[in-house]
Length: 576
Image (cartoon, rainbow, N blue to C red):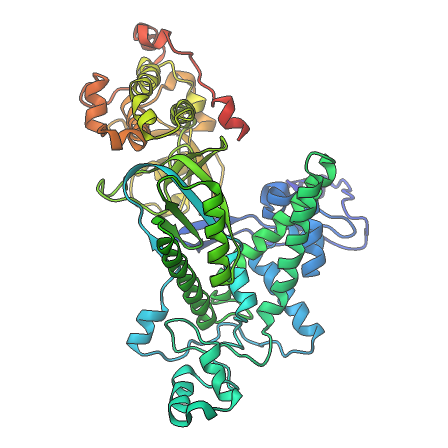
C-alpha cells in the first residue's frame, strides 16, 4: 500500500510526510520468491521509514505469533532495528544474535558462508546423513495412550552437549578411534586430554565434541533457554491473576520458542554464518539416542511404545495412571539428561491410514481426545489449510460428537450417528444449498501465470487473475471455487473468488469427494472406505454436473431441509 501511496503522491505532486526525519528517504526492498522445504514461498518487499516504525502485520511472522511484546524481546536479543526485525526470518535473527555475541567476545567471524563438508566414507555418510528417529504407529484407534514430550530437546542437546561448528571434531581433542587406540595401548595410564574423545563422543558417529571450551551456539542459546524458562514461570504465576501481564509474558516466551525451534535447522543451513553440517548431524545422533534410551526404559517398566516422532513418544500400559507416567518421565529424564513431560493421557487416539497406502500410517497425522477434555489434531482435513471450510465443519462436527467417548468401544458405538452427520452434509452439497463461501479452496502457486504449460486448476485461475490486471508472483496464494474439475467446459474448471457469482454453482461430485475423504479418515478403521461410504449413503457413480440458479431450487431434498443451510464449526472446537 505504501509504495502505491508514494507513487500517487509523486504523480499528483502532493507532499506525503511519512518519515519523522524529512531529510531521509525511504528504504525499499524488492519482493522475492524462493524454494523452501519443498514449496515455493513468496516474500513481499519491505518499506522502511526513517524515525518511525512501519510494521506490516500481514508480513511479520513475529507479530503474528508474539505481538509487540514478542517483537521487543527479539529486538533486545538480536540488536536489530524494530521494523527490520519484524520482517526478518528466524534464521536472520539467530545469525544477528550470534554475530553480536562473537563481536562482544572478540571471536573471529567467518568471512564466507557455506562451510565445506568434511570428506566422509560411504559407510560414515549412511550413518550420519539421517534425521530424527520416527516410529510409524499401528493403524486405527487406540485407548489409554499417554503422550510424553521432551522439553526443548534440540536446543537442550546443543547447550548441554556443547554442539557447535567449532567444537565438533575440534583439533584439540582426539577423534574417538584415536582415543580408543590410545586407551588400548596405554590402559589406565591415558592422559586426561586423550580421554576426551571417549567421554564426549557423538553416538553412532566417529565425531568428538570439544571438552575444553564452550561453543558459540551453546553460549548464545543458553541465555535464550533461561529467559524462556523464566517467562514461562511468570506466565504461569500471572495466569488468572493479571490478564495483561499473562499475555505479555506469554508473547515473550512464544517469540523465544520460535527461535529455539528454528536454531537446529539453521545449524545445518548452507547460508548460516555459524553453520556446519557435521554439527547438525551430531544433534540428530544425540536425539536418536535419546529416543531409543526412552524406549528401552519404558519397555523395562512394562510400557509399550506405539509411536515416536523426533522428540515425542506415545506409550501405553493397561491400567497405568498419570502417576505411573510421571514416575516414568523422571526415570527417562534422569538417564537421558533432558526433561520430559507428560502432555496428557488420551481416552482414545486415531492414527489414520496413509493416503498413498491404506495399510500403513504416516507419522504426522493423528487425532485424539485427552482425558482432561482437550482435543489434539495433526495433519487431517480439519487442520489443513487447503481444505474447504464446509468439509472442515463436517469433520469437526464428527469429532465434536466423538469427544464424549471414553474408549474405542464407545467410539465404535457412535458410528451410526457419525454416518448421519456425513449424510446431512452430503445432502446439502448435492442439493446445491451449500454456502459457496465455505467451498473456497486456497493454494500457493508455484509459477507465474505465463510459465504454466499445463491446464491445471492453478494455471487456469492464475491466468484469469492476470486477465483482471493483477500480477501474482510464484509463492503467492490464490482463492477459487471449483466449477468443473473434469475440464470439459474449459476454461471454467474453476473461478477466482474475486470473479465468482452465486449463479456459477460448483462441482458437486468434486466437493462430495472431498467430504467423503474427510469422513473416510475417521471411519476407515471401522470398515468404511470411499466405496462403503457411497454404498451406505446411496450415492450414484460420479457424474459431473454443475448446479445453477433455477436448478438449485428444483433439487432441494428432504434430507437437506433437516440440516441447517450453512454450518458453522462447533463452538467447543472453536474455543480450543
